[in-house]
Image 1 (cartoon, helix red, strand yellow):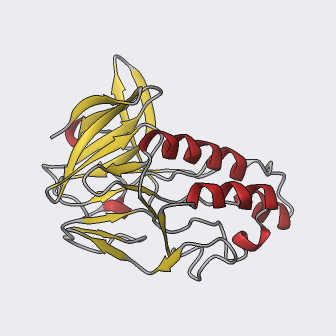
Image 2 (cartoon, rainbow, N blue to C red):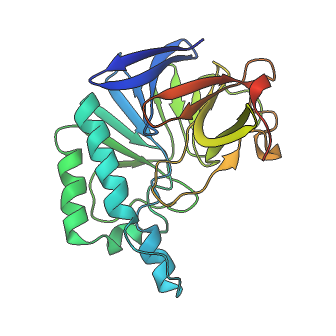
Amino acid sequence: MSAVGVAKGFAIGTVEVAGERAVCDRRGALFFPSQQLLAVSDLHLEKGSSAARRGSLLPPYDTAATLAVLQSVIDDFRPKIVVSLGDSFHDGEGAARLPEIFRAALSALMAGRDWFWVSGNHDPDPPAGVGGESVREISLGSILFRHEPSAGEAAGEIAGHLHPCARIVQRGRSVRRRCFATDGSRMIMPAFGAYTGSLNVLDRAFAGLFRRDGLMAHMLGADRTYPIAGRMLRPG
């Protein structure tokens, strides 16, 4: 189901979702070559400033870090279309709080390409003053992009929201990483944001979303993604 290749200096895992070929980038982005489309999920921009408003000491550096990685991904893949799968901002006022330096950086990333903001549970309304098109979900070819995964079978669905990660144990060593979770029919993407947490793909929140005998976790590594069969995964 998966092969590892190299594109522009970055090792990537090739997958098929509902017959559409895509590549899982080690930084957490999904790229569809046939449509020149890049998808990211759960950026949670301005999470640090949101926490600061509530008195938390969380450093407000997440937006800079997240946009820097997004810049590197866009530089490598040069997509014509970008889809951000919801929770792009950590709260409904996140876009309005965006410092001008980051607003300018985001505007530069969006220039010359179609950009879609899918509404999420953290940011259900269109982000203020950042451009792009806001949608509840968007269908392109045989693929449907939305924030929260549908219950039961949903062929061709690409979703986020659950922040999947995977854990394996080899030679007594436990490794836990964010991952792309797929059974070849649908996919749930890892969270892209610098300050986002993760949930084990074996958690009951994922129950019924994947064929039990088809689950693959494409774990994010330092130099590439690692396709791991569901039978190798461990809870925790």
